[in-house]
Length: 332
Image 1 (cartoon, helix red, strand yellow):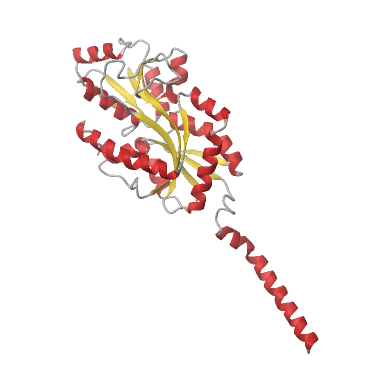
Image 2 (spheres, rainbow, N blue to C red; image 1 turned 180 degrees about the horizontal axis):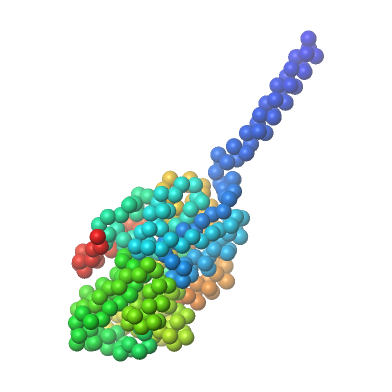
């Protein structure tokens, strides 16, 4: 009998061990951070290829996937100043496999669009800020003005005849253009595009004379002499173009538009996943090669915590709502 009981216990232990072993993959998956990621991760960029957001995402992507241990695929979904791609990201599963890689129009759009299919504050979890940089005002080389003062004089001499391009309604460039109109008392027509690539192409071709855009989208063309730079939107000059004045230096008082690039995931993504993505982002932003590539585009690596990005989002939602009201900017 004793021998039988020992054999029965051994059998039960064996069966229990086998059952536990069979459950291990499910247990590991349930633990989240130990299983994540076990398949490719998508950077959803809500702008077309060639624009500033796309350029910055492609600087980050190779090292991010190396540190993550899974492929990172860039998925460009342009349209409606980032609203099309951002809506897709908001509706994606909250599992860390879709990362919204966007810019500061993320906090501008709620101020100017009367209808959006998502809530910027409620539907996203901040991961971290990637980089910040100025917007730059550029013109076709044959445009009659080479300074902001000359541009303002031309606009006042022929009201309503000038137009400027941007990556779309609600972009930092759009806010910079409207702030320029408000602060200098001029009239210009805003021409929104689906992203930086198409906007730059039309300014290069002479279809639109002026462009407010993030520096990465225009840097190579300015350096090649195919576009001329008139000013940057921040309070200090850009390291990439130290000879280009700020708008305040150019004579437009009380002018500042600082744009940033950041990563978000759908709300309710597990905290351990968010922390892992944030940790990898901060690690790669310390690498000299990444920082140099960002500086070449006129941007500076930022990093920081998810909560720091959340504070930026909260404060800018208020800031841009105030400007949209003062400048009467609304898009149906």
